[in-house]
Length: 212
Image (cartoon, rainbow, N blue to C red; front, side, top):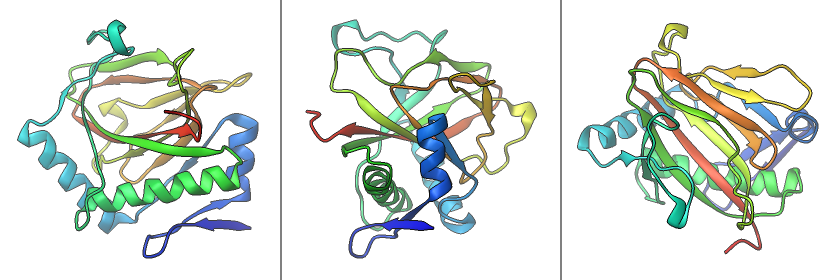
């Protein structure tokens, strides 16, 4: 069975029973295709153009007064992605919006707003050490969804996402173009393994309806 969500004019997102069950039982699920190759390559082109334009900045760790930049812990450069009609990145934003609605209803997560961020790891061994996406004592992120934009990825390039499900061996996700991984932000520790070539990803963080 498939469950379908998406507003008028938006491309719908469907969750399968297996995806909903995997999210509850293991804390994550994977898809090898979200947009299809043509749309995915258009998003990749726009993301690369943003990187070339120099709009990204070094990512920080922690929040507020405790925020700092430490490339030994996190080595990517980032920029926020906002709704924008007529662009490939805008289309992807709409798909993430529909995905959040599907997760909220189909997986009973009670999600509200989300943030979408473009990240580029420049290579040279850049990584993101093992961590959780939720911050204790904050209006927490409930779910994380990561979409990859690397059409020429090979294992030698590195940059795999390593997930640490409870009671299971770690799982490595290749950051290939149009791959989607969704996991529970407060539950799954994860890391980005050292990256040896430029690596692009777009990450959506979904908050609960009561988050500020």
